[in-house]
Image (cartoon, rainbow, N blue to C red):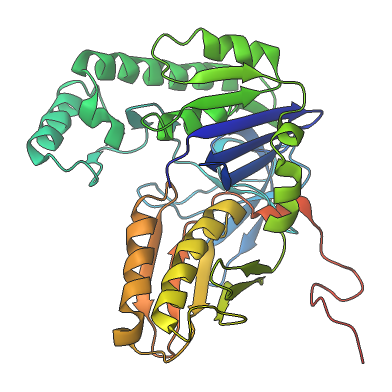
Length: 389
């Protein structure tokens, strides 16, 4: 699932980014410019506190996002938050608001760079386990330890494996400087206020797909000029006025909201998003594989991987494959899911076959799903999508 084309379109109030692989839409992100983006840092104001079921406390915080954001008093590696109403607090968006829920916040700030993540409230160096060269992984860990100053932590990203040590050290200094800027600004302003916005998300797409990216299409001249000026780019940049329309993506967005996805062999998958989980059913439909359920399920597993990224499905995902729910019959699709999820930029884990015969996946929730971004719950049926007989 490596992208070769990125299509970017900025309109009034929204940014849309589509990732294509051989002309097929595989990733889609639609951001409301006014909403608090995941990773943005705010000076928030405590509104009130609540008692949680686990005996801890939680706080509702105003970050000027339209809805009250939430932060848990308990956070790994930090002392419990003990705040009062009206108190200002530096926070970072861990999960964007979705549906009726406001954003989730954290105090353990992270500053993401190309090769590393700066964690000023941690005291450890963690190296990505995707770095296969263990000697290089140890070299990188030693490099970060040697250049760590005071109490701070780092996460070494996979991309650091092929980077120059001098570039890595330079980035460490830049990320520290960002943190200092945030602290200085927080002393000068009144909450609620944005302290550090998320960088244009297109750069994360470029970073993740450097090795396969061939073309970027944008409709914003300033971004076009920025991308043209990149000295290390190996891709073409094109400026068009109506990027999504020219690439036929508006129609693809509509298809991505449909609960039914047809498979090339005639089968289909049915996707139902609920508050508790996302349920996916694999149905033989008009399957042309002559009853070969192994081929049908393998085909479905490949499409499910695409749909998870395209729709940004997260939380618990439960899959009911076709045929008998025994591991010997579902080994192949489970292996396809495992291999595909390893490439997912969002932390995802396939837990295999449950006792009930379903395959379960847990995918970290960072942003709302495509359905939550583009639709609202029907007030008549309350999201059931059914009518009385």
